[in-house]
Length: 392
Image (cartoon, rainbow, N blue to C red; front, side, top):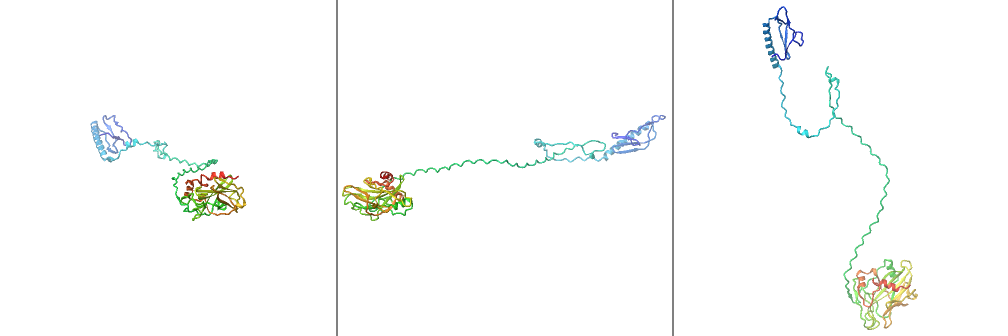
């Protein structure tokens, strides 16, 4: 086998040894010596002398055999490359196909001259990774421009409290009457308000000429007096209550004048047997300038008389006892009883003002029928009575 073998001259040049033909000796080849080189081993043949052509053929055959043998020996002496071990791996190609490809910037630069091969003159291209971008500095916060404060919205007026639902009317009043001498009066409370103090200050005194004495009309529970029949003497059965008597007061402004009404209840009004009627209410109105001054003055006195009034403006001095007006209860036969001013002194009773009474007592005085008599200071009569008695 001659592939990979060549002749090397004794001078070492990679070329075939020139043949020298002796012109004088045909078919003879003169070879000084020759080398047969196969792969990396060289076999040197002994110098040859001139030979004939037949002899030359034998040498050529021998050389070819030796060259073949040398090639086989060269292959056997060359270490066989060990096949790379089979590597087991997972095929990620299908997964990587579906992943987004990152953007890579490639910068082509000339290779370092120190790394270039001698005489090659080649340049190397290196792909450099994308440099990390320099973070952008955070700008400093800008100072906001001063702004004018907003004008505050006006405060809305407070929502008024809802009007409470009206109090449902109470159940119908049931009148309860007791004997006229079993009604207990209210005790006179300590005055607190201006009107209460004025009521006590100007409380009148009553003189009884004939007829019944005053009695309580209602107690704290709202039970009312049953009164008396008109029989017997004018004062029969009504000369005074063992529980004590009572005078009822109510006051208010009337045309810039303070009016105080004092009322008394009598079990009957009878000038004589069989005359008159069960129950009687009489009253007197004291008119003063102002209850809230240090020394209020009495301007007029108007006692009730038969559904009307007697007027004293100003009152006679002898009909006054300091700040207490003196009134008289009397009947001129056959006329019923009435009040009038008098110079004679009388008696005082415990005063209870309208606002000081219990609810049941006020309701009884508003609801109960008193026959021919009318409660002058209840809600239905107080205002009209002041209008009628107006003395100015």
